[in-house]
Image (tube, rainbow, N blue to C red; front, side):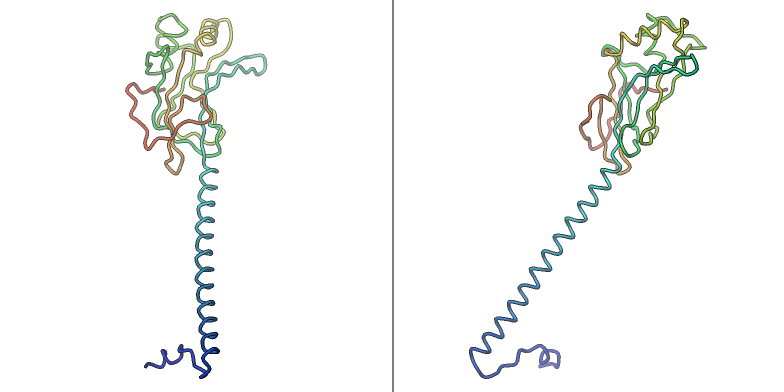
Length: 206
């Protein structure tokens, strides 16, 4: 017997019931210690999971579409926007836009179909556009997809967009910084999650 084994051995008193009581107490202490260790480990696991959920919740993006009609110093501006209403940045992986179910490639083609009765815009379009796919929107950031002055020169555009908004649909996939991804029509508060963003058949560019 080694000195270590001799050190941990429970000494016997020679009284049977006392020896049994001492052994039972030692066993109870060991079982209680094991139980406390297991409970502590489970508590730490739950705390780690709660912290992970909190971090994810604080990094949750939510893209939605809006149209705005704002004015400043007598000049009014009409804008078709995409806004990140979440609390974390959104990585926009893919964007598809449809007018009456027909895919369009960019804002210019959309306006030609919905609002200009098929008339080509030309080299100097009467509006400003910006892209969305492949960009990152910070929390609270507004991205104007189409923007133009609301004046008699753009009356046809303004009236056409107001009428056609219900016919314009979006299919947009975006991800959080933790690569959690959602496929959204930019209207719902609860877009479904996806493992990865699909490749759009007709990507919508700027």
